Length: 243
Ligand SMILES: O=C(O)CCC(=O)C(=O)O
Image 1: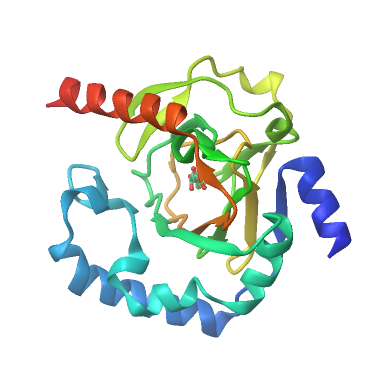
Image 2: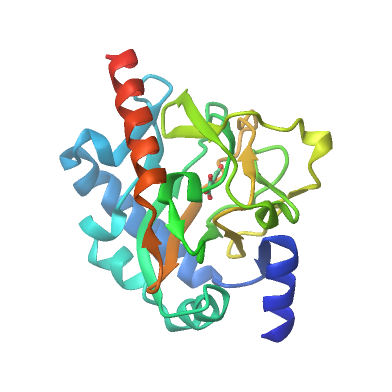
């Protein structure tokens, strides 16, 4: 555990190989089918992002709110035991989400820090990104900028990207970042700190690249009202510009 914490604190991300076995992955596949059939048609517009002209799902938000299975999944003891050490306190589930990145049409995610959305202080929050498919350079894996969390939160601005409304105002070009591709086998997880710069490319391959995300904060974190105010104002401007 000490090695994992040291590595997470140094890099701002941590690879957890073999979190889920084939049976657990099949169970999630079945539950996603049920979710798509029964829940998706009832979702408010805010809890789903489509792409390819509503032909494919890009994101599902707040899945724990609609599905007892995903709510229960987010409480797994092995996951909480690891998160507790990394967020320096009692883990609180903020959300369960799907980043589906469908074959051929899955779109890019601009470089951002998750704490640009959360505005938590202290920044003791992380995302547990679980690969439901093999994640490769070809199908649009996430890139993590090693050590970038240690520079704190950078200025963000509206990105106009559906599903990822907030991006780094002045993104450094990739060569300036020590980027590491999150190449994962199905069932692996990658965790990243909420101040780690990360992004992903479009999926131009014929294979989907689904990530199931559990977002955690420590129970001791509070929202910084100034930062949250800036984010909310920018969201409203973006909403009006797109209306
Ligand atoms: O799955 C992706 O492509 C991006 C994920 C992401 O932005 C996140 O995990 O915060």
